[in-house]
Image (cartoon, rainbow, N blue to C red; front, side, top):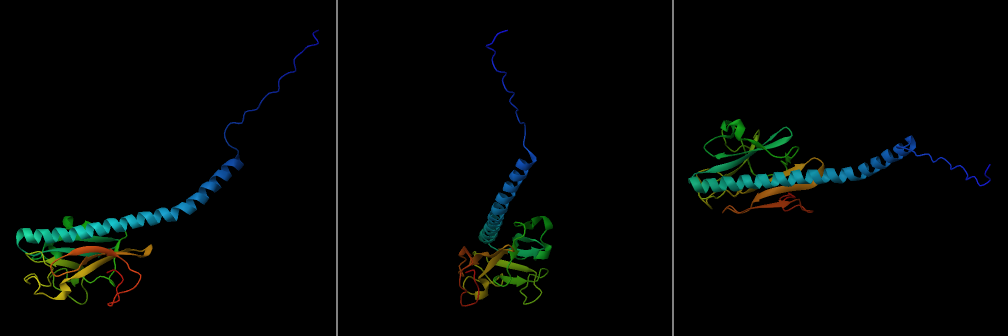
Length: 208
């Protein structure tokens, strides 16, 4: 018998997969990271929706103004709140918002809302397109044949009420100070966008 026997090698155990403890630790870490990241991600998504809606509202006013110049007749951009959506339609002012075909009303981003306390566009009766102080369901930006904002469709540039100017302010319920607005700032039809300011202006509005 040989005295130079090599020692029997020890068997090495290979662990496949994870233990229950390791899985629990991994799930805990994922939960922590998700809790940290989720609010920031939701804020980013909501801000994106608000920005997309602002761009679409601005585009709507620009198209209405352009169409008015092209056709030499008044056009308007009409906005209304339908549950969780703002809807936009661009049409001739001779057509009341109620008579605009349903497929021509386009929804802005989900959960974006019109802020009635900061919006100064004229509010009109949906059936008559006439300005009303109560019970109006549609906000409008109307432009005459030369592209100037007007109170009545037959008004000339500069010979109209200053109320022809105005702004549409939109918001998201989870962004309490994130309001954005489209502003018709002159009677010649200059339009711009802005966001909520830290201080209210002389009229008590924050988006100007």
